[in-house]
Image (cartoon, rainbow, N blue to C red; front, side, top):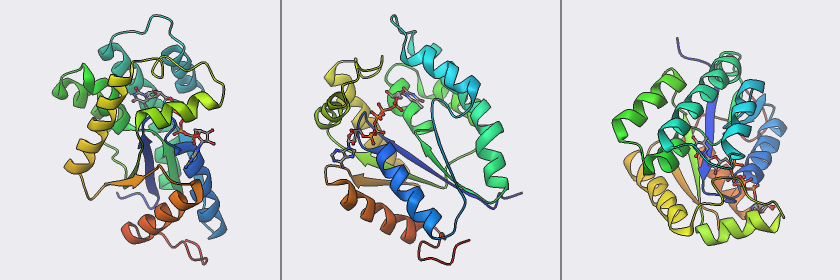
Length: 214
Ligand code: T5A
C-alpha cells in the first residue's frame, strides 16, 4: 500500500542550514494547511536520541561499521515509531538527515554493499520522496556551527579534508539520483535559500504551498 503522506529529507554538511530551512519550510507548509512532522537523525525517538548521545559525544569514536550499525538501529526505531505512522496518517515528514548522511559520512570507510545492507535494514525499504541537499563549503559550514559557541561533536572535530570528501560524496549521490536529490546552493541568506526550497518543492512534488492545504 502506498502511504498518503510525503517524506522530505534535508542533507548536507555541518552548519549548512538544515535545521533553519526545515523550520522555515514547516511554517510555510502549516500556513498552507498541511500537517507537518519535524524530526531528525540520529534521533526522533527516546531510544534513537540515546544512541545519538552515544555517537556524537564519544570521546573515542567507534569505527565506521559500528557507527553504521548504530545509525541503522536508531533509524529503524525512528522509521517504525514516527516516520511510517505519520506518513500513513497523511502527514508531511521533514527529517534533518537520513540515509544519505550514512552514505556520505560512513561511506568513507565502509564498503558500499555492506553499507547498503545496513541502510536497508534500518529503513525497512523506506526511501525519501524528495531530498534537499544544502551544499556549502565545509569551511563556511563549520564556521557557522562554531559561531554558535558549541564545542563541536565527534563528527565536527574530524579534519577539514574529511569534510571536503563528505561534501563530494553528497554531490556524487545527487548526480546518481537527480530525480530524488536536489542540490540547493546554501551560501546565500536564509530567506533566499528558503525561497529556492519552496520553488523546488512546488516543482517536484504534488504538495500545494499556496493555501488550500491537503
Ligand atoms: N551522521 C548523521 C552520520 O555520520 N551518519 C548518519 O547516518 C547521520 C544521520 C549529526 C552528526 O551525525 C553525523 C553527521 C553529523 O556530523 P547534527 O547535529 O544533526 O549532527 O548535524 P549538523 O549538521 O552538525 O547540525 P547543525 O545544527 O550544526 O547544522 P544545520 O542544521 O545544517 O544548520 P543550522 O540551521 O543549525 O545553522 C547553523 C548556524 O548557521 C546559521 C544558523 O543561524 C546557525 O547559527 N545559519 C546561517 N548563517 C548564514 N546564512 C545562512 N543561510 C544560514 N543558515 C543557518
